[in-house]
Each structure stands twice: as C-alpha cells, then as structure tokens.
Image 1 (tube, helix red, strand yellow):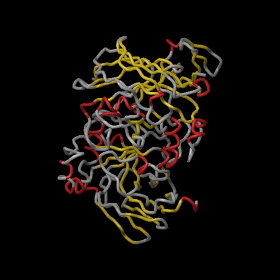
Image 2 (cartoon, chains in turn orange, red; image 1 turned 120 degrees about the horizontal axis):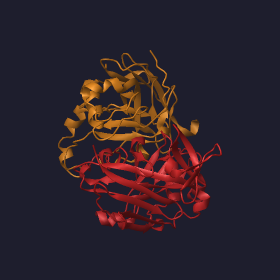
Image 3 (cartoon, rainbow over the protein chains, first blue to last red; image 1 turned 30 degrees about the vertical axis):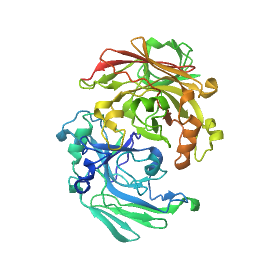
Image 4 (cartoon, chains in turn brown, blue; image 1 turned 90 degrees about the horizontal axis):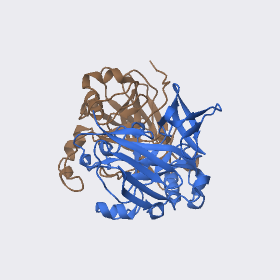
Length: 216
Length: 250
C-alpha cells in the first residue's frame, strides 16, 4: 500500500558506518589517525533538499564526473517526534518507509566527507512510500538489468530500533524527517548511461538512471 | 525590513519588526508589542542550512588548525534552531560548551553556477546565529559530528532577517558575543577566509541553492565555556542582537 505523505518535509538524515561488515573491515584503520578510536555514538550525515528526487528522475552528473557510488538502503519517515526514546517505542513514531539510493562521488573518506561529493542535485532518489514492513528483506540493486549488489539489513550494526533510540538520546528526530538506516560498505559503482533498479520485498521499486547533465 | 517569524495567538506569522525590536507589524495591519509574542527562528522547515568550519583565520589558529584551502562545509537539521530569547540546554557533563557568533546569509532566489561577481544578488537578507559546540562530544567521523553540532535548540537564530539592501557590505560588519555582559568574542566579517560571495559561488557550482536556504559563515576567535544560567548575547552591526540563555538539560 502506498501512503501519501502529507506532512511537510523536515531534514533527511542518514546513518553512516552502520554496516557491521564495513565496521569489521575497517577496525584496524579506525584505530589510526585521523580516526584514532572507533566511533562511539551513531555517525550521521544530512542530505539536503536539492538531493531529493522521485518518480524515476535521472541522476545528472557534470562533465568531469562519469561514475558514482550507488548505495541502496531503506529509509524511514517519522510521523511523530522521537526524543530520548526507548528502542521499544521507536516503531510507533515511524509512519512510512521507502527505498533510497544514496549517490556519492568515489574516493570519499569518513573523517570529513565533502558536501560537494555527497550532495549534488538529485543525489538521493527515493521510491514511493509504504508501511514499514515487520521484517526487512534483502535490498537488491540491478544495473542495466543485471544484479550488481544485494545486502541484508541484518548487517546493520544498530537495528532501526536501537539506531533511532540512540540518535534520539542527543537530538530529536522530528515528524517529517527521513532517516536512511545505513549504507552498505560494498555498494556498486554506476556510470553515465546506466539504468538502476532497487528492489526489496514489501517495497515499491526505485528506478533511476545516471545521465550527463548536459543531455538534460 | 526586519522580517521576524513569530508565534502569536495560536499561529506562526512572519511580521516586520521595528528597528529596536519592541514592536511588530503583522501582515493584517495590526501592531503588537514584542513581549506579547514568541520569537521563532526565522527559517522554514526543510531549508538547507550550511555552516562553515574554520572560516576565520584567527579562530583556526586558536584551535590549532591551518586555515582551510577549500570551504569546510557541514549541514544542520531543523531540530537545532531556537528563536531569539529562547533557552539552550547544556548537558550536565558539557564543560566545554562554547557560543559561536555567526553572520548568516539568506538565499533569495535559485542559485546554480553563480559567478562570484554576481553572487550577492542571490542573497536576500542576513540574520545572526549562535552555533554552540560541545567539544566533549567530538569524534573523528563525519566531522563535525551531529552529536556536537546538531543538538536540539543549540543554534539560536534571529531575531529577524534584515534585507540585504540595508546591510550594503556584508564583509564590513563588527560582530561580538557577550556572556553575562562580558565580551568574549569580537571580530569583523572582513576577516572571513571565504567571503559570502565566494561561498555562494562555491556551493552553487555543484548544487542548486533555493530561497530560504541559509549559510552560517563561521565564527571569529574567542572560545569561552558557558555555564547554566548564563545570558549570551550575539550582536552584529546593522543586523541586531540575538539573546539566548543557558539552562540545565533535563
């Protein structure tokens, strides 16, 4: 069932470093500079409103950029404010969910990722909204009709309940905000001219393509 | 024009404030005293808010950093803002919480690939932010991490947006912060590493800036840790005075 979202948009947040496999693979690197210690609190980023795109709109790349990382995930939409919430109270504040494709330039880092690499226009295509399923199935990314990536959200280091609860201990997730639950560390690369489909059981599929900005 | 967003008689209204802020002219033609209303941060939900790290050379030196070669931009969420005269919660363990007085440029029309020479034509007004940081919560991932810079009500904003035409040159404004009357920050916007026109050019090169988006342009030197009960006043020439009080976080 697709739900209309009548609430005005708030802020779109994403949880970085919430893929347990990625965290394991970087555990030695995260002891060294510039990181020095593994992350303690949830690590968040913001995708500003110019990134949002719907309905199959293409992701435009400028002339000097031909390929991007495309990280498929599930995002949850808050219908109530969540402040200092216990994990068991999180789901009652989630009004809807969608698939999201977080687009970013290659070669970023975790210390101080540049907004320029993450927040170009159209760098966050979203699917239409549905109820948050009780169980999250695998999220599959196909590029030009061929499966390029799949991951299970059982890989999330913090589940949706734990993640939202811990975030809400230091900031309110407000009604109208959207939260990307985590990005797979092994997300595939897509290049100009390719079409992308993200699918997962119980969700409406997300379709987009990567195009040269000059052709729009 | 000083465009203030206020809460009055059960609804949110944009009003025009008198020069001293004591009177508000409502769109209906009514006039109300400002002590009869609540000041809200002059921003609409969903606006993109950029903030600049280390954008004054003297503040970089004080923190032990070299001034950056490209703008250090981070983003803020809507939960962080609180209006003029509001309260900012200070957690009990936040012994290194300090105010940061910043000039804010408000975007007035869509900006994409705008050259520096015409960049200020896309700025419709200016306001004041006090972008508190709590240094205890710094971690070396996605710096500055949201636990430091995006806590509820830790970015007082306002009192109003002053029209760009009134400000004339945004790079020649004195700014200061006083805590309980004692000056702890004093500088001039002439000392920004990247001025507002450069920032609009830089950001609009890779993304579209939309009306209502805001750029918090960084803070000069002066790190002073605040305590519960402090009154913090950020003042910027030609813009106004933004008052905020520190309360114990529940």
